[in-house]
Image (tube, rainbow, N blue to C red; front, side, top):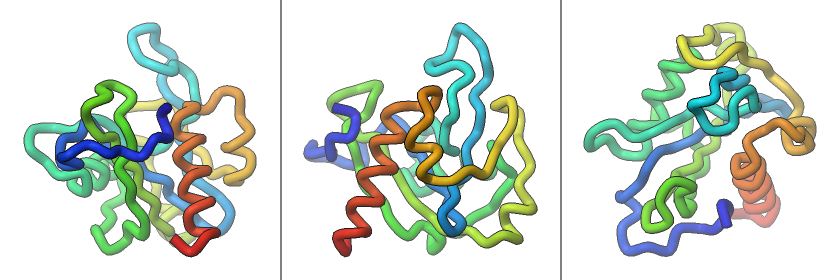
Amino acid sequence: MTTEVFQGDDPGRFTGAKLALLTGDKVISILRDDRPDIEYPAFWDLPGGGREGDETPVDCVLRETHEELGLRLEEEALIWRRAFVSTNDPTAAGWFFAAHITPDQVGRIRLGNEGQRWRQMGVAQFLRLSDAVPYLQGRLRFYLDDIEQGG
């Protein structure tokens, strides 16, 4: 389903990218706006969003992280990446990344113009929330399982 690894011919054909920003056993999450015209209104989300123009998955996730949280990360900060089947288009990829950030970087987070607020919460808590974007919970679990297995 939404945690299905993308098997298509072109992982460069993608709809968007999301990022698990981790510090220790915590993850940065954004409470989505509460509007009827968006998917998962008022759900806890991870930074990221839709592709613009011909940007790469890395460009997309770094741009979105800066727009949403004010953090400028370098590509080297992205420690894990995987293309999953997009939730918007089953013939395209939806990229998921993970990065570790420092407490100093957490202190520099400033919410952009999307979302109601941001929060640093335990990874286990995010995975248990009934009001978190479900496919992102699945992708975060996939990442955790993969690194536990040495991936």
